[in-house]
Amino acid sequence: MTTPAPTAPAFEVAAVREDFPILATRVGAHPLIYLDNAASAQKPRAVIDAISDYYSARHANIHRGVHYLSATATDAYDQARVTVAQFLHAAEPRECIFVRGATEAINLVASAWGRANLRPGDEILLSTLEHHANIVPWQIAAEAAGAKIKIIPINDQGELLLDSLDALLTARTKLLAITHVSNALGTVVSVRELIRRAHAVGAVVLVDGAQSVPHLPIDVQDLDCDFFAFSGHKLFGPTGIGVLYGKAALLEKMPPYQSGGDMIERVTFEKTTFRSIPERFEAGTPHISGVVGLAAAIRYLAKLGHAALAAHEQNLLAHATAAVRAIPGVRIIGEAKDKVGVLSFVMDGIHPHDIATILDSEGIAIRAGHHCAQPLMQRLGLTGTARASFAFYNTLAEADRLAATLLKVKKMFG
Ligand code: PMP
Image (cartoon, rainbow, N blue to C red; front, top):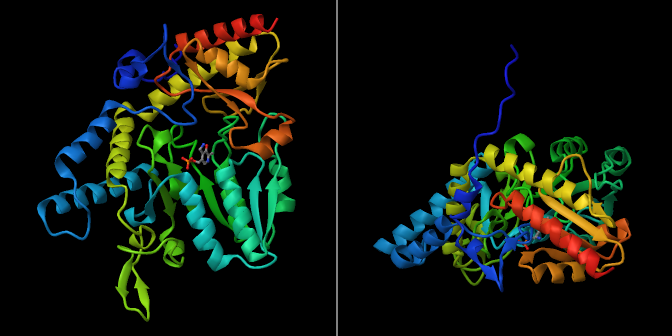
């Protein structure tokens, strides 16, 4: 007798949807079908309640107060850092800096690490897949330092051409800044291998995890990345909060990014000394309720269990890809072997914005355009794509509705 293959744990999508009040929205006569999760994910009641509870019962400014509420808020803030460190599997909570989002995390490294480390003739390595948030800060840092930017190319499926690394990674490479998952195509990048190769030439590596945290388990120690950036709002948490992970040894050597209250040891008009990490990089009153909400999102996801979510998402992607591919005149953009739930496509003779507008009239939310990845679109010879992006609360029936409505779009345009 053969042993049956292990199956994913049962996942009750209908029950999970009940946790997200916004999913009951109606768009005119139609139930909302929310397929814009790569831009921002919706929030479970656990997150909404945690924020409401924080403001109802626990709010005061943190760190500077001796009174009851200040101590309560400080506890919540510090405990959230522990939760984030566990989520990323960081060696220590102080390696996790609270910032506004992935954009600010990358700007912090480009500005503070860049100022201290980049010199004329140095090279920064990026890839064709990058979001503008992982391009523009490096252009500014490179220009300030007289450094040069080089790009890892991709193939037509949207996968990095790793063969090019031998020529691109040299003793001049000071930093590799690489996305973990492409927001426009869904490609999962084998960052572990890239990190190993970059470290071999002495380069520091920043991983843009904005699109990987909602889909992949993260272990920054196993990856051995030097920096890892993500945003709370794509992880079913609040907007305006995100995390920069950095190895303590690197963060400790970096000059401040922003300055003011909370990040100082001692200030005189002659000289100021700065606190250690994480406070050195958290000037001013932080987004305390955002931090509390982010920790609630992480706890909520942990309760559902990664394996069950991932299995459902892969099922959704395979189902939607097959259904959309079957429509004549549709071309799927981004067919990497390893993908998360992002389905980018174009339709012959129909502008992506027209596709998105017609879908919206039937309650289906997708995104159309360059997805903040103009260099990638140029490489693909496109001005933009239509992009449906899935979360674990989406259903196979929603994927079918997407395909059926795309067929209508095709008929409308003859
Ligand atoms: N990197 C990637 C890959 C992204 O998808 C995004 C958001 N679209 C960002 C960075 C920036 O994230 P945020 O706007 O939340 O700062």
